[in-house]
Image (cartoon, rainbow, N blue to C red; front, side):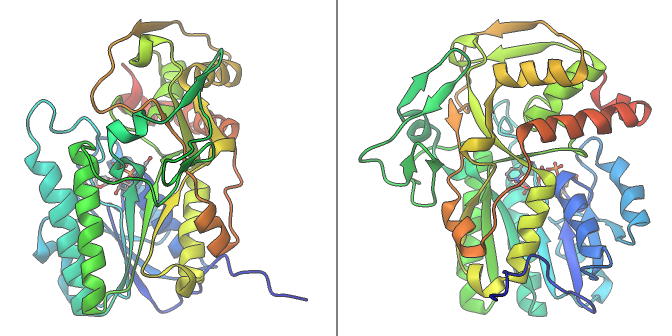
Length: 367
Ligand SMILES: NC(=O)c1ccc[n+]([C@@H]2O[C@H](COP(=O)([O-])OP(=O)(O)OC[C@H]3O[C@@H](n4cnc5c(N)ncnc54)[C@H](O)[C@@H]3O)[C@@H](O)[C@H]2O)c1
């Protein structure tokens, strides 16, 4: 009998810092790390800039996670009053793809890039490891939009991409082009990746994961980030649906990874550290877990029992990509891991969470 690969690390006695620890991903992974089966002592640091993150603070406390109101731009805040740490899960970011378009890019650069620099210095001082959450948005907009697609009744579908490195009908792999313009958000994250790679020379062991769209309960979705949560919220709380860009027909496509799959993946990386350390990986729902906005509306209608009309704006924003699907076969092979939850489960779980917490979530989602 062969042993199956470990899916959970045992971190009893270890202290983990989760930056952005009151955010969507940060609060979910912080709670998983603190659960008895993993057993870490977890400190979540967040400046609560994201509207709705404050609602996660009581959930952290209930899970035994210590919360610190602090800012990754401040090395003093990150010193955590002298606590020793063994691992940093870097989830603090301004994650908006639209940030900087109307001016005001300083906060993003200082948080997303300055924050990583501060975390890496802390990791170096403490001999801590790091999981860095990067993004599919590191791939340049023009190159992603140059991929060949087939238009169906409900979506743009990727086809085979002969001669394009790192691209196929399965999606975009780690070897895809990186030269080009990618939004300031993507640029700060790619620059963060470069810093992470450099700190390997200072003995900071890290894993970089470029996530596609992650969604599920706990996501305070808004127009510029968290589209699946926003879409379900419009069905539960009201507000306008709009198909923006790509002709305004709602055929743009993303793959989606359930937040529980994202947490499972991060834990599997920790459990199988030698298989992933020092590398950059793509992770997402993959082709089988992809859907267009039009298809998302149909699923939201079916799950919520509420039909909402959608307006249309054919103008495409320069930051927008037509289709993004993650090819994560390399990571799946390295960890013997694959996402288990479907888009239907993502949207169903969002609906359950929103309807069960309607009063609490109304200030975030009510238009
Ligand atoms: N959610 C996704 O679909 C997705 C996809 C790819 C990558 N990511 C990455 O995952 C990470 C977490 O994203 P998320 O979806 O949880 O976003 P989020 O906005 O829910 O969480 C980020 C948290 O960071 C906090 N924060 C922002 N600036 C800070 C600062 N200067 N100091 C301390 N805290 C600060 C915010 O208050 C927020 O709680 C980010 O690095 C993001 O780039 C997310």
